[in-house]
Length: 185
Image 1: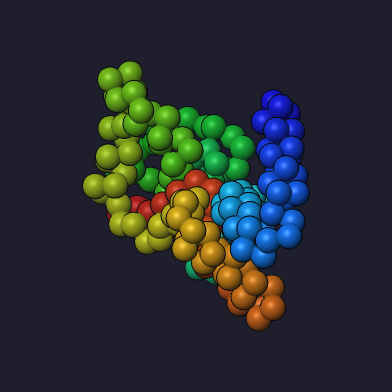
Image 2: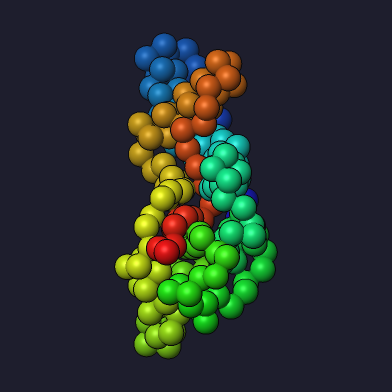
């Protein structure tokens, strides 16, 4: 694992010794090295900055508190604000007779597991379809994908600097996709 790095260091040192007295050679070696290192520096920086992005569950919780969507009025799937770690069985809930419940919160961390094997999880996938077709989506919290292009990576860096120095609101989210539905009465 360290052999390529060792050889790269030797090669760089050798090249630098060869062009030590040539200005154009030094510039060429410097440009070559920067072209090789900058993508790794950008990727490492952006990966670290992504850890500062707010989680969709926190943003959803703020939204729910602001609009008085309480835990008592909500059926929450696992990995949602009111049920962050528990994977409870919500698939027997009757959305046509919700009782005191007014809202439903779905998480992509749960749903994607069942959607990956539709023939195995017919009941669960039918439940998700039923909730979506008979309820009103009031808020959708979507995480942002990891930036892959240099331009997108630079946008992330500038957004972070803007947040730190101007105290602006975050533009990016991480975490699962969360959907908050209002059950029909």
